Amino acid sequence: MSVKDISKVPQHVAIIMDGNGRWAQQRHLPRNMGHVKGASGVRVLVERCAELGIECLTLFAFSTENWRRPDDEVSTLMGLFVHYLEKELRGLSDAGVRLKVIGDVARFKPELRQKIEAAQSVTENNTRITLCVAANYGGRWDVVEAIKRWQAVNPGESVADLTEAALSGHLSTAGLPDVDLLVRTGGEQRISNFLLWQCAYSELYFTQTHWPDFDAEELVKALGWYARRTRRFGMTSEQTKEFAG
Ligand code: FPP
Image 1 (cartoon, rainbow, N blue to C red):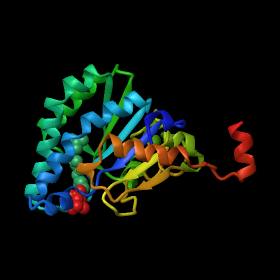
Image 2 (tube, rainbow, N blue to C red):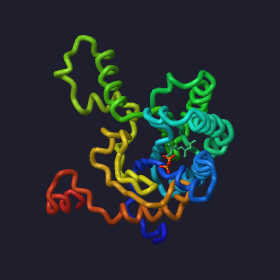
Image 3 (cartoon, rainbow, N blue to C red):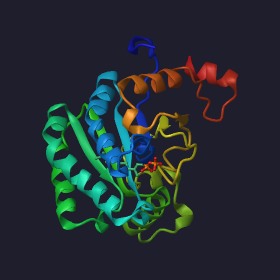
Image 4 (tube, rainbow, N blue to C red):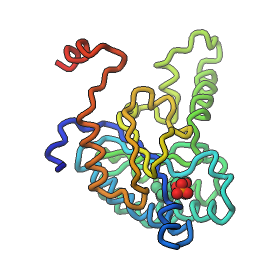
């Protein structure tokens, strides 16, 4: 499958980057090396997504549940995040990437929070692609926070008046399209509290490939699979054909 064959390009691709630990263990390396290798491929993949016309790529870098991992693994992941923001920022920005971090960053150290703020502000006017990094993110947290935010800006209103459109505008992904294609590497087939609201109508692509091996060729394979899907959004096949023109 070549890039030319991809007729339908998703606007928003989200990826659960799983399999780093197993990739490392299969090579008799410490688990952390899987994360290092996994992080090193991100920049090329973001650039490839931009070339293909994808508007937004969201990566699940650290979940609210990942704090349960051994301390040294948590610090490796935090360190990689800082390193990424320091070393890759210029290249990403030059490539027209807008960086957005979603998740409860309040729990991160001030140094990391400050780097996140700076990276977001340096890249805020870039329009080629949005790279959304989910860090200390949980889908249920996102929905609960959105309700709280809605209530804070509408103090006189009852939740009985809350609509889906209004709530969407207060999610961490406000302004971004819903996820068209959700990819999970590493062979597991679950959503793991990722973008629960935003994935309501996503096509789900699961691959055995571990994240450190998920390169541009694997991406094109996933996009080719997506292009062959018929998305029905609850309609019948006949209605879907009319809808698509
Ligand atoms: C899951 O693999 C992966 C993670 C919990 C972390 C993903 C983070 C990175 C790739 C690095 C940081 C990313 C950026 C954007 C800077 P696992 O450890 O659960 O693998 P396993 O299931 O094989 O054990």
